[in-house]
Image (cartoon, rainbow, N blue to C red; front, side):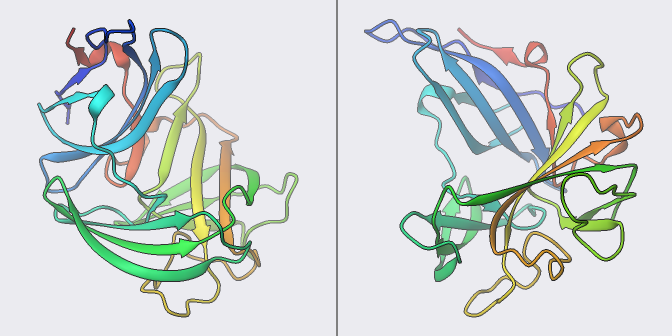
Length: 248
């Protein structure tokens, strides 16, 4: 479905002459909903910084990047529904092993946000890169298969791994429009689920990794795959800036 909404990408100049130009836009549709999750980045017209964040928009709704209300969370857990989001929030000052603090319920743009808060040593993370050849989707998950060992051990005993939808982002080739360059999946892994409402976390199988905390997965295809081969729900896809109607 083609989305039509308005972004105040080039804002009215402030007293110091600063505006913002939309530079990156990713969209995740919500099934059976007139709302979408928007992840964006906009650079200052004075080249002194950027604004970026995640928010919820109704289709045909406008957003002012300068004053946009942002969702304050670190990770989506599972595919959003039309009524609610389940997220993880990280608080600085903890240790390398995440520690559950509390669960909070709030509202954002008419949706219920359930947040599990953890203290964590932010900046502590693992970066894992793999090659892959195939994938399949279920309603709630993306299964990546045909994984080849590169610099790291395989994440499972089999050569496949599954992730709950929500944080998955498809990065297109710089030279071939609509062709997948890589899949990026930031995850928050927990092996011990003491005092938490998370039952599946962001990854389906984690025992063999023996990792707790933030892990940034990158999967690079060994064959040509179109981003259109993936569904729109629970997966971030790039939106062409030129296709977005901006308002001066």
